[in-house]
Length: 401
Figure 1 (cartoon, one colour):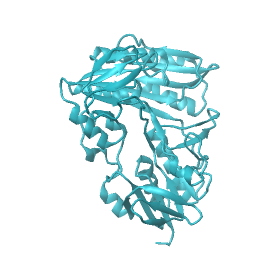
Figure 2 (tube, helix red, strand yellow; figure 1 turned 90 degrees about the vertical axis):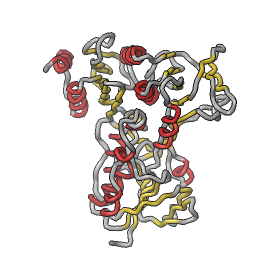
Figure 3 (cartoon, rainbow, N blue to C red; figure 1 turned 45 degrees about the horizontal axis):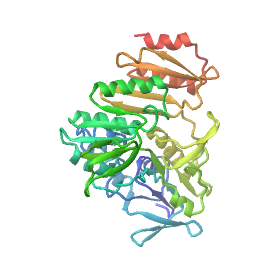
Figure 4 (cartoon, rainbow, N blue to C red; figure 1 turned 45 degrees about the vertical axis):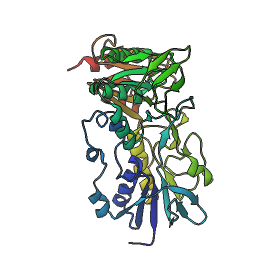
């Protein structure tokens, strides 16, 4: 071993991936992975899906077993990083300890956005971001109980599907005109609304929460206009906020996330960053974007590790995402920002599979594929390679066996 030390702050998916890749890329010095949950790094997407539904245990969520970190000589530190002294190359922890670094990686993720609504501090009101959050929600997920979910995004809908499988009565409140309004076309929103209503979920749009009421524990959700909904528990899923405070206090550039370049370097080239806490310019879309995506976090972590090890590699993969709800797998290729036209393959008003292709100025830029893996793979490849796409060809891929 050399006297060099790489310190990774954040035992997230990106943090675990980065630490492991450092060894693969030849880092011979020490590696410290600092996390504050008191658990081994674990996958977060299953939290609102299989883990909440009781279909998997915590050990199945682990990214790596404890033996991996031992074999790779990666030291796990249970602590919270409170500040960074860049001039001294040092991180101060809440334990009172300090750790010196040669290279530093920030993989600090994001936190659930809190509602400032009156009564939001009552017991029985939950956010879903960690395994501990899910374990608290599970205690309330008793058959016949009434759970109100505030937010009709992916987390809200995935949580609704999981709770339905447990026999819970679920209401979803979405403040805008339709669920998934920020990320999908109206046809996709209508499809998921139909599916959830068919499963017994009460979906309400243009539903603004005015207050939560109850004696110590939430009992009702009060809507603008005065209607009250009985609730044994409430789950709030209204987005996340990137954890940028540590970086900002250290003087690093922040713009809706810790600013990184295409090699995952921050404004201090001895510090890299990866995951939901970062924002970077994606040339394909011509703008700075912060992605909330495990595949993107994994790619950024790999690039960051390569950068620390002196290798030249750049962030270039097409963003992609997925969501599991009931027996449906939604796979998303690309970003549909600024789309001006959609092409549907299949009928979203019936059945349980179709694809929605997004175009901008005649160019295919993204696709939402529900139970259509062939469409997803074709679209991902076509957009990545900037291949010309004939619309009839898209429909042919969808209908081919």
